[in-house]
Length: 336
Image (tube, rainbow, N blue to C red):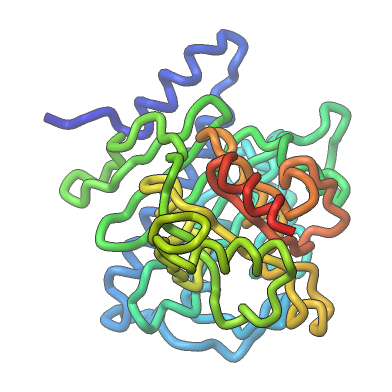
């Protein structure tokens, strides 16, 4: 029997708020359609006439070489979400500036921020990659074309956040602030079905998601915490830990939400030497993933303050992120 579809779930959520207009539901449904299309492009890969794999000749605003799928996925997001009349503008990892909707299209009251392909370095290896999205409301007094200032809202202002993971199964995990729920794509009917209800961050996990390549450059709290964990059953933690890293935040946060663990993307000397304040982008990577983790009962910090409290100062600003169960994150921060 067919379970609850993501559309049915969203309608039920909308009915909890008598004053809701349905605009947010429409934006999310457009995102769902975009993710289905991206999933199809990935499934065909090198067999596609569009040849979606491989490297393009362009770079994004961060100076990273764009994969062909980065460009295709970004365009799919634009095309699938701009016509509904519910979005006013968009920010993406793959675009230097705000995307302003064409003049002839109606403008809505929501702002969409997204990373169309997270972990794109994994594309040619057919490893897990994903899409991250965040939705915010425009200020009530805003009108006309959205400005950069409208997008520079703390993560706590998000009205919806989520990601799609493209792996053995295609799955959307999202929240509107009440609970975190996972929907798995049934390819036979083309619908995302509710399969993981009210996801909660688990305590006492033995998994750590961190890139060990920069271990010699970690700051003291991270170094001390990792030394204690990697000492194994004979060390201060008295149990065995596993260290994993997928080169994509979606894949690691997905594992954290479903199976527990601590995600660590720290600020270290190698990033400082490149003039970077972190590996991940705040608005369309760190904030939406932090919103998911915190709604699921975890915490997310940049090492000093909660991620969701950070006031952004640019649309492509970077940030560290440490996320997981509150007890584990507290232990790490106290390791200095």
